[in-house]
Length: 489
Image (cartoon, rainbow, N blue to C red; front, side, top):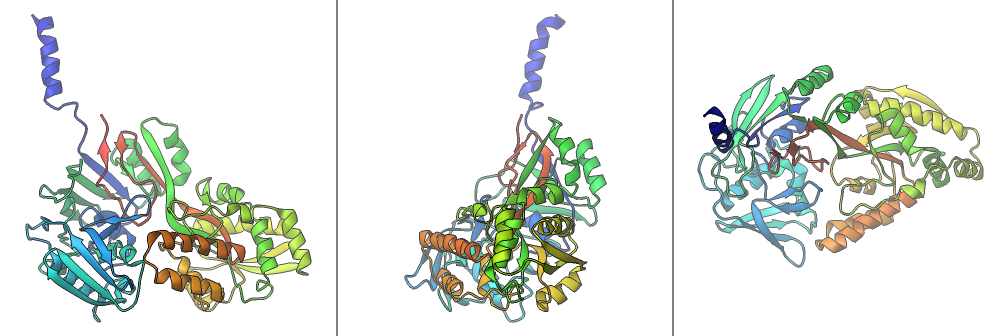
C-alpha cells in the first residue's frame, strides 16, 4: 500500500511548486545609499538600488551601454537637431496607482533644470530651452542648440521621471513607475523592494529583492559562503575570487565599468610636451604585467579613452604595445636619455599598486620616477586643479567622457583644435551611424597623439550563486538592474 502511493505523493509535491525556482534574491552592497532619490544625490549606491528597478526615465542604458527606449517608446528629432519629440507608452502608472503622462515628464525635466535644482548632474539639462506637452502621451523638448547625445543624457539615473505629488518624499519613500516597488529600508542593514503587480511592461521574474549592506570585505566573503547573500555584483574582496571560481556553487562575473584607468601626462610640462617622450612612456608599459601585479589579473587593456564594452569601441592597444626597445629609441631621438619625472598617486589601490609597477617598468627604459602618495583632497588641489605634476594614475569613471580631451584647461592640458572641432561636430550630430564614426575617429586621434598612456578599463568583479542568471556583466552605469534576473531550477 505504501509503495503504491509513493509516486502519487511525489507527483503532488512537485505539482505544489516545491521544486519551482526561487523568486527572491539578496544582493550584497558595500556602501549604503545616503537616500533613495537619484535626482537629488550623487552617490552611486542610490542608482545601484533604484535604477531600472524603482525609477525609469524616457530612455535607459542597456547592459551593453547602448541607449534603448524607456518610458518613451520612441522619439523623433528635428532636422536641425534641436527638437526632440518623445512618444510615451500608454497605460503607465506610478506605484501609488496614479497615471504617468507628459505632465510628469515636464515636471521632472523642469525640476532638474530649475535654478534651485539639487540635481547632482544639472549639466545634463542645461541645454533644454522648453518642455511642452501637446497631449498626455507626447512631450516636445526644445534645446538651445543641437545635441545628438540628448537621448544618452536622458538615460542617466538623474533623469528619471517622478510625480509632483510624491517627488518630495523620494529620498525615503520613492514612488516610481518601475517593475519593483519600494518596501522597506532598515538603515545600516538593508533596503527591500517587491514586484510591482501593475507594471506596464514585462513583469520581472523576481517577487522580492533585498539589498544587504556589508562594507567589510571579510564579512562579504563570509556572507556569500554561508548563503546569506545570493549575489555581490561589486564584490569588495577580489583576492578571494579564486576560491569562488573553484567552487561550482558560485559563478564569478568579471566585466567592465566606465572607468578608463590612465597614466595621465602633463602635456604642457616639458619634456612631456614632446609627443616622442609620451609615446616612449606608452611603449614602456606592459599592460598585462600591470593588470596582474596591481589588479590580481582583473582588468581589460585599453589603447584609448573608451570602454571596451561600448558598441563604438576600437581596439587600439597594438598602437602602444609594450616595446621597451622602441621606447629607448624614442627617448634617445628626443634627447631624453636621463629623464626624471614626478609620479603623483591618489589613494585607490589601482593607483598605489599600479604606480609601483609602472615605476619599475619606466626604470627599465631609463626613466626614473619620484613617487608621491597623495590623499584625494591633495590630489584634487595639486594635480587636478593646480596641474602641478608630471605623471599621475587615475580612473575616469564618468560614462562617455572622451569629450574631456576637448578641454585645453583640463588637468592633462591637451590642446588640439582638430579634436575640439571633432567634438563640436559630435555634439551637433544626431545620426547614430555618423556619431559612431566620429567616436571612432576621436579614439584614434588621441591614441595617435599619445596624450596619455591608456592602461586598462577598471574591472567589475562580482560573485553570485551559480543558479542565478541575468545579472549585468558590465556596468555602463552604476546599477543592479534586476529586470532580467531569475533563478534556474
